[in-house]
Length: 338
Length: 289
Image (tube, rainbow over all chains, first blue to last red; front, side):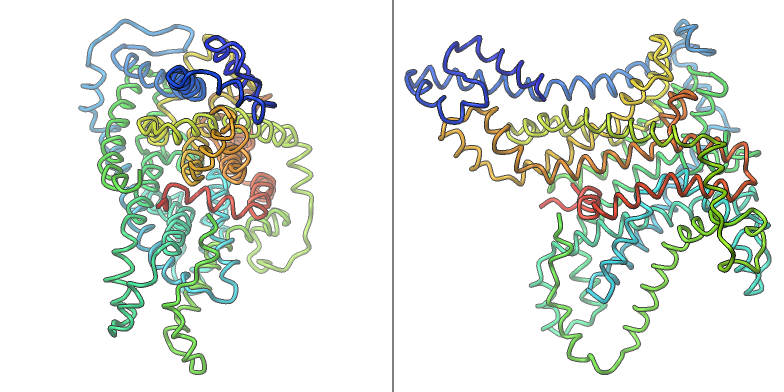
């Protein structure tokens, strides 16, 4: 903070030598000096000062974000056009045009199944999370004894690392000593393989994601519900609408924007899910790639196989897909929010 | 941000009239709520129970809840597996990256909000959309050429990617809720614009900074992907340590659960004390206006 502050005042004192005093004192003494300038001068000075201030305050963050984000995006696009592979010390290889993209898009063994799994994971998890989230949020809306406690419990999965979540569920779902199969056996169902069974692993991962992130939808919707005006629902109540009708035709339409935003936020994160899948299934998404989503595939290509060029091409494709999906929905939602 | 706590829709009041007869719908609702609580909380209970069991007890289904607890797993994790330094690494990186994010993000958010630079919101949003792995490959390339991989600085820098957009996003919204008239009053009384920021907006924005800072610490503490690639044995953070533990000792469930407890409990306890801010931060932007 002090750096910024100093440079700020160095900068402005070049235009105007005396009137600017350091922030500690300008609260009171600065006024009289400034007042002596003619009106026009003050205006341009103010505008110039304003501009300098604006940029001085924004620049550090923008530069940091550009270095952290814009440079990597540009560099990834650059790498995607090269045949780069092997360790980083070797540096980028010569350009080979778009053949990485061709290679990726014609790869039926790993790429397209990964795209499909990413889509299924996102759609499945997001859809169920929204439905459950809406239902539970409506259920929790009315205050009851202990509702504060429930809201507290809802928050806990959201601050838990997905790696820890993975570890906990791996124990609970362990085919031999897990509590899940123990409970199933009590009600007479044969034990399941859960994460260890290639055909059950992926639905199980979706289930864990739902467990962890439905609370996010719930707390966003509860905040949205708390901000709704009461009159429309009161009016509907007076008009004799049933509870279901009030919910379906009054509350949910009023809540629409909040639901859209919850869906966008959660959807973006679901598309990018990596920690949970990698921690439970390891590199390649399991022995027969049964849980390999795009993120896991790209990670393996980049850091296990060092196929940086191909990985970058897939990253570009992935990023464009995420961007289109997010922007399409966000544009709609942000129109009223910003 | 604490709206949830205050508003109590009066639509619901007629229920009070029927207080005496218990309707089937409220029984259903009670059961539903109970189910939600059990499903959400059970895994944590299970984690702590398993952390206090020996591995023999864990595989013994006759001793699900009643057993003689042991702290041996925690001793093992802290001493044999050396989790102490990892706790320090996680905390150090989370706090440093958050402090830097606040230093850079708060002034920027103020400028975005006060000077109506809505286009910068796009950059901040972009940061939320970019898949983290897209950044990792170029960073790895860059930082390994600079021979920085494995150092604290590169981890703090990468975790800033988590913190900085978050801080800017939350604070832009927060400054938007502080009436601009306060700044104008300050200017009339002779404050410079920076003075307005420093003496008026900033003190009022403390709750917002708490929200953004707390959330940034939590997300950094839980971050796995960046540390997985950019950390060395010396700078490893807890999620990576837990992951490696899972990989090489997958049957030591007691130890694993003790490690998971060590990693999750500090942040859970921290969040319980700061619940208002955590919930406010998680819902920020979603309920504006």
